[in-house]
Length: 166
Image 1 (spheres, rainbow, N blue to C red):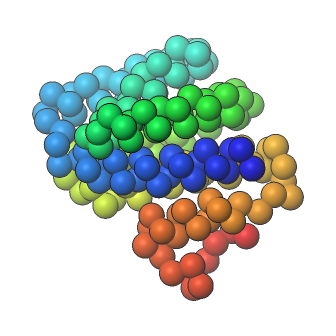
Image 2: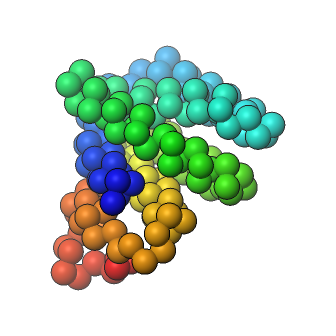
């Protein structure tokens, strides 16, 4: 339940925050985000997940920075609490970096195209995959209904007709 609640917070707040931030990003911001991607790759290649966490956190903070300080504070708290789960999951499945890298790349590419909707959908998908992976490892019987509802809202799906993992 803790993982699920943390990711509901992250999905809802950061999904909105990235939509707000994408139009505000400058060429310098994109250059910084590209540099953070390169740093994450370098640390992932050496399996230095503690160091990889620094540019990873900065990437996520930068891509949603336009939302404002009050919301940013709540997002930071949720990310801090979720970090222990994410770190354990990533270390348990180190080959997961290729998937994570592709997700980060898709988010950044959408932002660079000024496609806030696709950037938001990519971020939501990134969080959902992580949350479901962690939940499955911790409690395979848990049905993440709250998580599914948050995804439906953020991806503008009808919960009655969407095909979800229940």
